[in-house]
Image 1 (cartoon, rainbow, N blue to C red):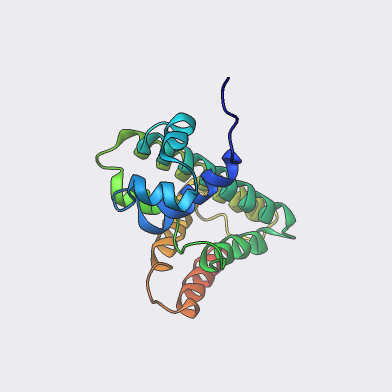
Image 2: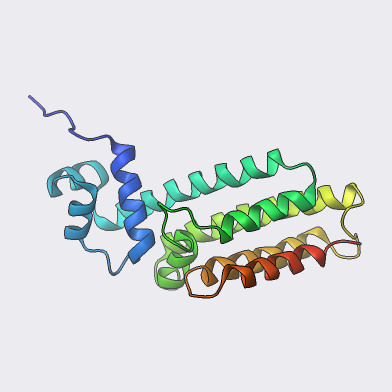
Length: 192
């Protein structure tokens, strides 16, 4: 008779995601994962496969969570400027129970050049992020809130680069006030 799982898969995947996010892929050992997730090594392998497969699943979980949160922020906004402010504030403000920075950006820096699966996942998320920025910019241009002097695709690429840069900078000791100034100027450059 097969044993039933003694853990909730999403709960332990969340724990693995946060550990990879905090330490990175290379620094996180299987022993770290077993200890942090609170499950047996055999259960980890049976449920998630090897470390690399678990890491890819953790990346998917991160993508889904962040995308849902950002889309939710945008939907609640009154206008395009507020949508961008909410997104940048989301990036700069680190929740108490979350590591700083971004799992996807950290993973791209650490692994994308030598791991095609990680590269694919980070590139997919970056494409989603650029599309979100493009949609907001188009909204702002249509409402007359933002200048139409530049193509929305080009502006989205630029804002995404700022977004990624801010994600990296949140992992440093740079003061949040400086990060907010950078975000505010990036938004101001879009206005008429």
